[in-house]
Amino acid sequence: VQLQASGGGLVQAGGSLRLSCAASGRTFSMFTMGWFRQAPGKEREFVSAITWNGGNRYYADSVKGRFTISRDNAKNTMYLQMNSLKPEDSAVYSCAAAAYYCSGYGCYDVAEKYDYWGQGTQVTVSS
Picture 1: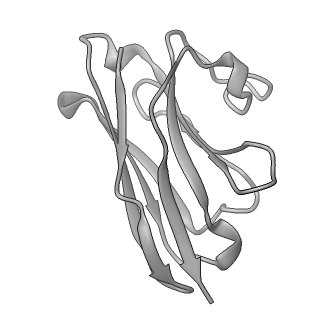
Picture 2: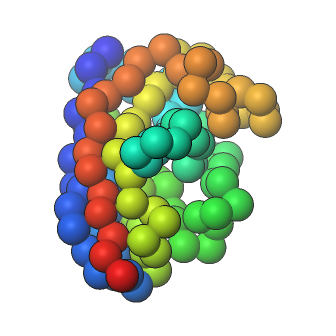
């Protein structure tokens, strides 16, 4: 499985961006998908995750109410709509896939639980 993240860029505080993660492979629909981010000098952190049919969606407290995760299994693509962006959201955002049902805390929020990773896309929010 190969993942390709896109959609990052430079935006002013309060603005919006939509990230996409396109996946190859026929089993995309079975994967739990997630977004993680890493800012310079900081550890990678969980942002959001979605189970195979979109039935469960999870968010870090820092983005809850501002970010929305979704997926289109017919297009093998996951999205992250980011609204009301803040300078502290600036980071490299990476998408990841777990080749199994990963729905509990301690799974979806843990980078080591994911099997496949895409390259990151830079998000920069200016104040």
